[in-house]
Image (cartoon, rainbow over all chains, first blue to last red; front, side, top):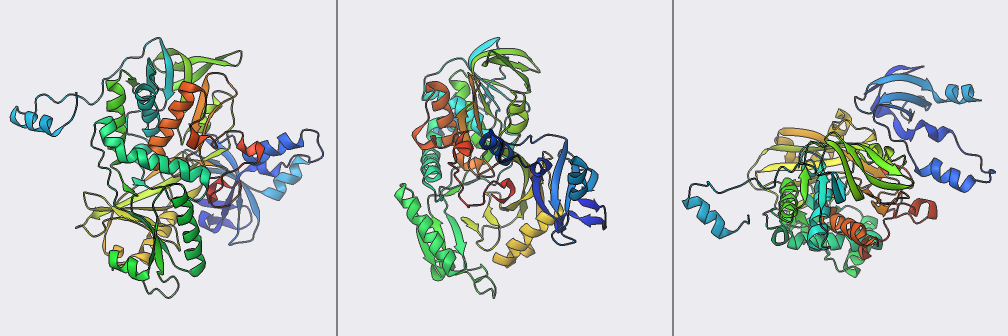
Length: 92
Length: 416
């Protein structure tokens, strides 16, 4: 798989480390009353979809940036690559 | 129809005209007592034990494709019970015992071959870890034997003993481990279940669950609606997808694992070897091909095919431990989809929906578990209580903090 890094261009996926679903960026509020249940859901439960999947890849053997990659889990086609920091900022 | 030496002789002298299909092509009825979704090894084993050990009637197995087309025909056929944690070891040892009696139980030749599984170690700390694991195995009634380098050399003189980086110092041998002809496992369980009246319905994909007031009363399928008092799901690889139809999210990611076979070679490897300094395991099939594999690709996938970096990694492992493998050509490679769970251990449990039961999360160790998985899932479906060796495999263990994490990796499925 080739991941089109927004800053570095096409890079082989083997340069990256895979973390998982991009929902891991949305850490629950630890002060919430439902924090225990929220963190269980955040840490352990996954949508695990067939098809489009937004996921976190870390460019360990490159510029060490975190990317949000939109990839099809059935075909492995990558349709979108964003810097995770841009995604995080746009959510604020 | 049974199989025996007498039967083979009789068919031989009568022109082999009496062989019948191993199971009926059943048509779905309107309703069953128990429906098993997934006609893989685990689903068929569940149906067999429900009918034979728990005296259940009116059982159907629904399979979206054909029997033997999923992971039961894609794995590397190894059976073993060499785990460390009690929750796993007792279960897998129960499984190994069932393997030992499987062929008589289902009256089918599954070529169960206890040729020994040898885990190599390369450092002193690794030896100590293997001693600890061997002791844990023996405490659960399994067999384990620690070998030094000489002991390994007697078995497999061709290994790369004097590698500068990872010399082979010895190994942990489980003599009762081995291999089983994997698709014969599916056929054997299908044969035995069918003989007891279980309907095995192929080309029948479940498209929805009928759930009313928190109770599951049946399923919608591509071959019409089918009612049921109880529904058991055993579709590892696709668990996330199927349970999403019941509105459930699981502590599971689906990942692709590749496996490989070389061209046919003369007999050279009579057991199973795993490399301790990389992820590589190899055995030789009765046809002569070296069957080997390694790590999962490491990203969510339902594609049943992987990428080349992992192929390279697996072959490097092979070259490192068994350099002569480089002379052989690779014949085939393929992928299967694994339910990678959050602690690397499986789930056999009821769900919060009445009448809906779940079996999955087998990571890439599901094949060796087939008999015990079927037995304990049948136990749960028939009695609504957990089987003794499977009572830790609960869906709520993550929220309760009772993970069964053999490798201590934490909630990172691609590391298990």
